[in-house]
Amino acid sequence: MRIPRDIPADRLIRSLHVLGYEVTRQKGSHIRLTTNLDGEHHEVIPNHNPIKIGTLQHILKSIAQHHSMKLDELLNRLDL
Image (cartoon, rainbow, N blue to C red; front, side, top):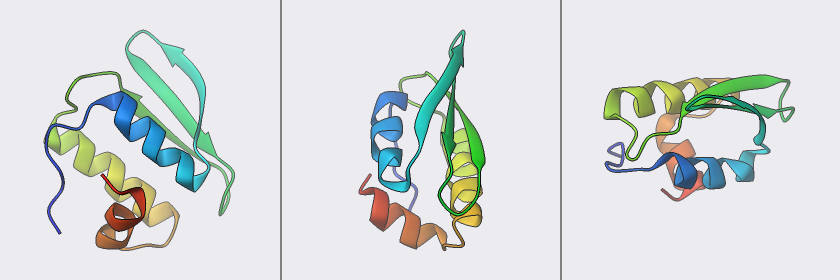
């Protein structure tokens, strides 16, 4: 499955609530999300519209690795 294009930060943040991610802080245009599901994990999302594809791919791979999922499984679960 391809990484979706033109995903704004607010849509990604809303979709990550499925995996228990909540906004813990923001500094400038960077928003830190934290989940305690499957152990504590932090991820920083740039508040850009849209998020650059390379940045989005890195974020999604990190989240998939933390939750022991393949990237395709994560994309299906997030419904991006």
